[in-house]
Image (tube, rainbow, N blue to C red):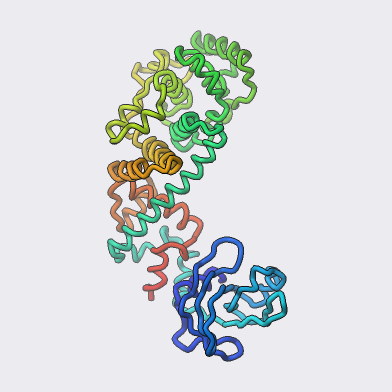
Length: 423
């Protein structure tokens, strides 16, 4: 209920009758203020006329007046700046910490808005605003998707900065960890990130001229060599890994149980992905620098070319041969990496270097890539939104995961249109 009152106040969806305080003074809302999502009063710098007096200050909103005391605001100096207490139910008076009375206003939420909000928050249709999507103007859709794209960049930038911090400020290492995560194809993403975080990169630098030694270390740290060997190559890697493990004092590793194989295509098996990462590490010196220099999708595809050692050309796991084929990343797999790892990393690095050129390039690359095809983009497409590029698909994924799933319809522009227009 309190969130709904916030919404009604913010967008001035007031009853048609004159607004008054609980003691009968008229209230004119000139400016509802800036919505505060952090600690302190709910709306900053509101401009109100209460009776004959013009007030500029903060506004606090509660379901019940007594919530003022339940939240301890009567003893908090930060709330002495409140000029109006807006409530859904007035069950007590409210006072500042010095004992001064704070004017209160009972705010009725229109019944239609209340009913629409109930439908949005509890409806079975996904997205709940499905019925109005096709009627929205292109400007409304475009402006919201643009904002969502920026929001997604900011969200991913925060994650990347966290990885860089863990890597002691080394962007190259953090980039490799990010690539590893998205080679996990969702199902093994967490495992790949955890695995990459355990790799002693400076130790691997010393052996990167030998892809089989790097494979031994990569697959060993993944815990996939911790069983009886099934063929001679596995036995060879085990022997090499034991030597490297002792040489570099490697003790923190994953277990084989951490990896998932069910419903994965063989080309996405962890063994193959680890072999590809080993090949990348050995043949992709200054990989991050090359990514920064690439100024087109085509250039990025060339940088992201990978393969494996000869053993994996006819194997997906140890001991079971298969039809021989090179284990290269296809265009679709490369695009997944570009959209989810490369472009966000480019944007984050651009912010780090205060480079508008890199940030703008990241945005342009996203707009040039084909939209992702998954259940979320198909859902929005069936609702009537044209998903033309990866910029659109990333924005719609952000919308679904950050607003639709947690039912934050009051913070969504589509939800606003539904509440405003739906009868």
